Length: 401
Image (cartoon, rainbow, N blue to C red; front, side, top):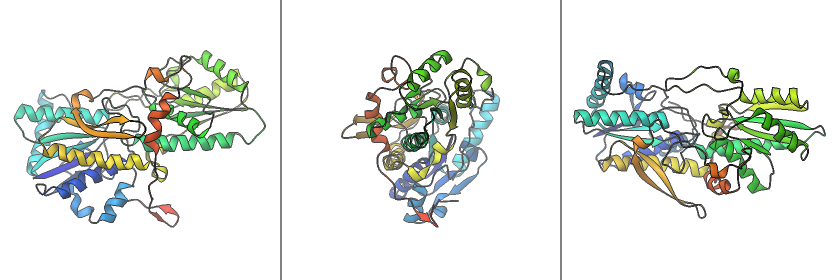
């Protein structure tokens, strides 16, 4: 039998580690012959654009380098498959399954987030409808950590580590002048504030900033925000604010209104909007910093725990398919925080497709402007350990196809 694997959605610095996990486990499985990589997610299957990964990943050194290389080496997409049923949909699904059958592919692994699990769910539904024995298994990935059922997602721990380290450096930078200041740091998170909330772990290293943390899960008021900033300015010379890009402002004119294929808005500008608000209403020195795409793929400060787990969950996905499962996504189930112990299991992909997991309300303070210490116990294990990054001429080396 042959298998195929694809990557989809936003890049992370752990998604290639999951690809390595699938590939390594395939090499250990006598029943598996070829391992195909689909270029640009499901589009590679639709267009019959497959590569033989055994010809590209040749050595253990290649696997290790790929494991620590950020972004999606096979490319990505944000293609939403139609619901199985209509005439156009039928033609598309037939094209997909013709490609899979042409290459004798009996298991397909899709590494991605909420929307990618929608693809896994629809493909497994169609396979069941036509009596196909092809197995479809999802491997989770997203820096947003908003995939339901699983305790956390590969890619999140490394992104959180980068964000917290960067915020700590901003704290140091903001403290050098005698003049009072406010620094607003805009962090990714459309509807779920996990990444922004993770900045609370700095308190484990005796930092008191960020002094204010705002998440999409709480109602946001510009008036209350200004009151919070004024209260913190009375206590601190340099006030640090962490804010999720997805908080709802009264003036949504700051948003572009543009959406992707899954209907998600492209968000930006909340930091600048709040900077202008502070400048106009408070009048102190203020700047906003948008971390933007750097937080997705900063492998130079990745979490070893994250990279190791990403590879492990890819490996378990292959075992799951070989056991005959389909229409499932691999998940982490946490057993304990300290010592940190997780198990890897499978769950029905229907529970995750197009679904979101929000940051728990119990970990948000009553004022909606900070995160409780309980959340630190959840975040800390996910950012532990450092990877020995391969370097050349003082710079990280990346695996390239």
